[in-house]
Length: 327
Image 1 (cartoon, rainbow, N blue to C red):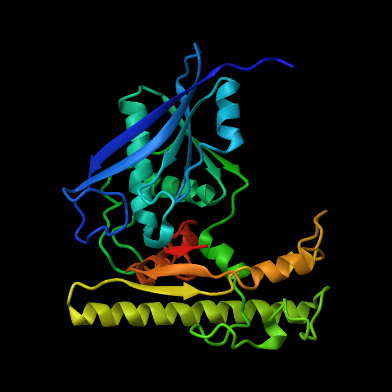
Image 2 (tube, rainbow, N blue to C red):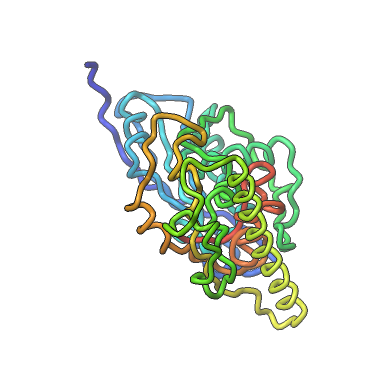
C-alpha cells in the first residue's frame, strides 16, 4: 500500500463584518458587528495544490471525522470550516450560515490563493452545499422565512467550482418530515398519543411489514403534525412582533422525532439493512428534539420556521433550511 503524506494541521480564524438589523443572541458574533469563525486546515506536507476541499456542516465541526484527514494524507488540501453556530444549532439561521461559508470561500481564493474550491457536503452539509451554490449562482434571499432581513442576495457569494455529496440527506426539513412521530396529539404532553400511529407501541395493531394504506395514513399524519407545529410557530412570532417589546425568542421542545417506519420495516425502500428492533424503539421513543424559538420559519419559532418546517424551510426548497433544533 502506498504511504500517504504527513498531514499538517492549522487553526484558522476568520472575522468579517455583518450589520444585521436583529441581534445575534447565540451565534458566535461580536457586539461590534463582527462575526468570528474558526476552522482547521489540513495540508499534506511538502505538497502544494490549487484546489481546496471545504467540509462544512451548519452546526457541527468535522475535523474529527476520518475522511478529511485521509483526503489530506492522499494529497488534497482540506478545510474543516465551522459556522458561527458551531455545536449549538438552537439559534441557527441557515441564511447566516450561507454568509459564513461565503466568507471561507472568499478567504480561500483571495487570501490563500486557491484557484478552485470544492464543497464536500457530509450529512447536513450536503443540503448546505447545494443551497449555498444555488444562492451563489442566482441569489434571491433577502429575508428569512420568519421575515427577518438577511441580505444574501447582495452578499456577493462566490460559487464553488464543484460539489461532492457524502452520506448527505436532502435537508433537515425533509429529514424531520419523514422521522417525526405522528402519534403525538398534544405538543405539551407527549404522553398523549394515538396508539395506532405509535410504531413503538406493542399495542398498535399495525405491525411490520406495514401495508401501503397504513404508510399513506402515517405520512399524512406526520405532515399534519408538522403543520400544527408550524402554525403554532407563526402565531407565536406574530404575537411577539405585535408586542413590539424587542422580545423575539421562545424556547420549546419537539418530542419524539425519530419514528420513520423504515427503521422497523426493511421492506420500505429495501436494501440489506436489518430492522432496528426493540432496543432502538426503547431508546428512541423517549428522545426529544430540543428546539428554540426565533424568527424564521426554521426551528425555534424563527429558527424552527426556516430549518425544519416543510413548506417554508429554505432547505426544503433549495434544499436548505433554518429552524432551530437540538437533538
